[in-house]
Amino acid sequence: MTVFLLGSTVSYAADTGLPELERLLTESSAAYENLKDYTAIFTKEEEGTTEKIYLKFERPFKIYMQWLEPPKKGLEVIYERDRHDNKIGVHLPGLLFKLKPVIFLPQDSPWIGEGSGSSFNIEDAGIGTFLFDFKKAVEEGERQKKIEVRLQAPLAAGRFVDVSFPGTQKKSPFFAGRVIVFFDAATKLPTVMKLFDWEGKVIGTYRYDDLKLNVGPDDSA
Image (cartoon, rainbow, N blue to C red; front, top):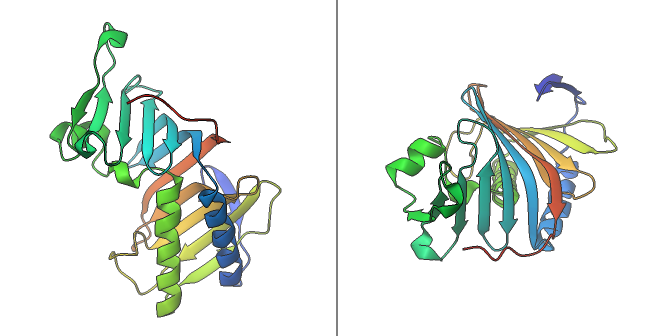
């Protein structure tokens, strides 16, 4: 079987690999539990658009994002769970950029939806949320015997897994019909994710490049 992920050809063995996936998830969960914070260049591809974002995340859930390319270049967003009434802080680019205050908007603000994409949910951001949701989907797929796993041969940089949930539908905990994930060998964390719906259409591709762990706290907000 061959799939194309971010322009690369990835070949998978024909046999299933649920035990190996479970091992990768166990290692990844343990690595994340020992994590305090990280920074990365986060690339999001959805509905024909690509956004590149500098991202800093601190546990339990504080996230800062700065868009790096037009049309949103310079836009900054910060969110910390259970602070500022769970509103999202927005710092708009433009003239006298450094003098503009952070404006806190509710998550259901029309501007947040329009400015950040229809699928934007700040609580969905970050590696940890994906890892938690993916692990729940795998566990439920195994329980229902509705899961197929294909593995790429191990690479020095990590390993791709291709997971499908046949016979399921979009209902918690299944957030996609098929998920391709790359587990980074150095960090043990998932750093590339490609999601498909139940008709085989790509929902989105997400990747974390230049990932740096435990760089220290951010005193903003």
